[in-house]
Image (tube, rainbow, N blue to C red; front, side):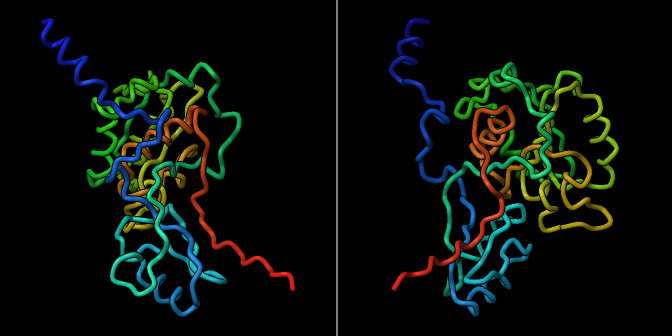
Length: 254
């Protein structure tokens, strides 16, 4: 037994030090596009390459709606005018319809139980969520724990585009949760429907069906981005904006 203790002490802590220290290891996150200034003809050609309309032509360049980005990388690969790219992972945002009465008190900041619901996921976002429980990301450090029952859940984490068959189960899970409760939508499918959008089988985003409190963009978002979303949900991290717009050019004084 003493040999294992010595080996453990020699190996040191291998868990991520986030959020005390930002993770700088390469490959941590695929990143997301950033609003970019460019000529109108280049902006038109670039927005035409986006399959989900995440890129929007604007005066002076290209705006980005992160709710729709599916990480296809068509805007940065194989084009003469690539969009700017943000390699960060703190991308979670409080929903625009966020109700202040639904916010957690201080008692939830270091203790929250999470119910995960697959509302029609392809498996990618769900795989990233599972990584939160491994030794490296170790979400238990933050006081986050998975629970199999809505009766014990404080947070409802939803992945996947909401299919017709999952609407009733999702609603029942949400209504069975005690208050206060919050909903975290993870991945572009849960935020906007992803490549499926809104159709006869998909809702086009969880917010069409439930009050969403925190949105985590990406397809799939990396574990650290999901951790950021959970920390935003309990009030331990700041929210960002999912609508990135081209900044107007400042007027020069003669």
